[in-house]
Image (tube, rainbow, N blue to C red):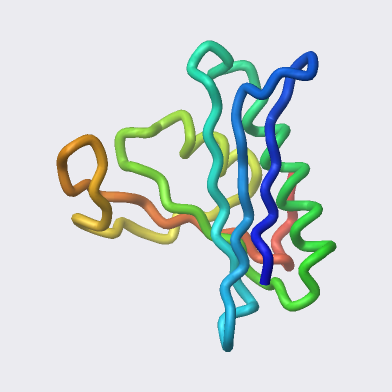
Length: 119
């Protein structure tokens, strides 16, 4: 299953990216969502709008997709707000899950189901 990759652009200039990575095999019902935005554009609603469009497209284009999920570092409150605004559910804490900036970090798991209503 190919990864959906998008550049987040303003005035034909890339300021970030996002992806939806469908799982393979017996797990085609789920996909991982990830995104990043240049710091100078934080807090303007850009990530929220871009991710909303991408997940809408993802559920339409990927026939078997039932669940999108995202992992967010515990200290990344802004990214947590992006997902919560879009109707993602915080499922829980994954302790010592990933290596980031020289240390093993905790992350939150978020999910959105195709049956969930998105604002």
